[in-house]
Image (cartoon, rainbow, N blue to C red; front, side, top):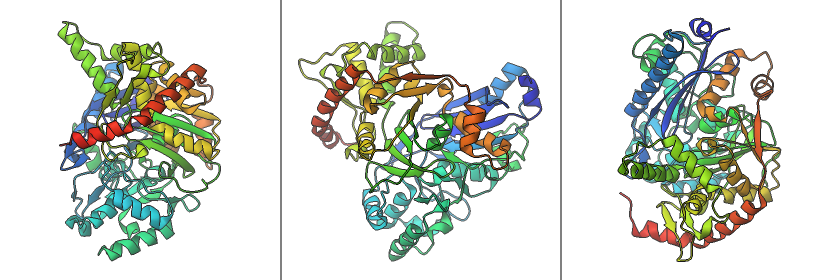
Length: 531
């Protein structure tokens, strides 16, 4: 079947994802192949002590990404996109997005990047005997109660960014179980919020004057494949103001970026794992058995079909690489050249492999935001070197790549001590775009082979489209695991890089300096106040 027939016949499936720096739209066909794509660049804002995005920017970006997708369809096939077989919405997990009974935002959207809920996270973790990270929605809500914020009593609906967009498109207050597991702990056996912990939260909240039950204001939890509503006429206009997109498109449960990463890398079965490395970095390892005890470095979340997952999440990854790439582009412009950003990134990553295995004595912290994995509530990007350090371009690039993934090491070491077994670790995200480079660095960090699929460049929106395809096309009783393995990834090419012993030893030396110099990073935070 040719692409034009797929599009005009309404057989294409749309995946939307609101990432930290880009909003992306991907259209796939019956064989899960990419037919067209669109994107829009956006940035978070630091306002009033919080990292946030304005909701007007959400809709501006979604419309622009969808319009870019439509334009791509028109260029490729000469048709106007009007009909879809299914669609789904994904976004950054966690955060705080409280709405009143009229759907009005009660507080600026507080993203996953904020590290402002330490007291709440500590209190809830102690009460539940379960690690609650600061970025989880429950921690943000309880911190707002501890701080006596006036808006809390008017909360009718508390959701994530994907849940908010899905609600506006369909009218349904639902959330995929993977994204919901970053709001509040999930009981995998029940496929819902943990009832005992929810009761404990209600008791704590009532003591602070909050009279609503937590389960009254959180979205309904749905596993992958369930009916999550359909695109309304109002929702279609929100996404496509031109009026070409027809309503009635079925939507799958909205998911978080961790869930789409698992789908996009076929990592939903026990003993599989993936590392998503973009603006933030997180490793997701699907568990065979529970961990022996809670760890502050390890979050317990779920796959899109509800299986337990150990998650190691770092707030910072490629942001500092992006900043340096922008500086190199400015240097080229000063020389009268027109910079090619793809070429700049490729040169940075490839050159890193020629750098000294230990980073040449350089230490680089990429902490634009706080990094709870390393005990930092705030961050300041910082490069430290001694007089004897190798301050060459290859050494600096090696240190850049090491710095981007260094915070992940703390959590991975704990999982190794817990004997969490992984048969396959997949990499995806911008860090792995240059062949071999990102894989070699991560293999040195994890001490295990790292694989990248030929589809790794498609990323989260493609993973979201796969989840929408599963909901629309699955056979009776067909699991998500079977659908991905048998229908999507069977026969797909995989490139695998094993750990290089010189890299492993070099990274270990880098980490010794990295940990030893952490007081310098702490001093930078203290001496260089933020806005």
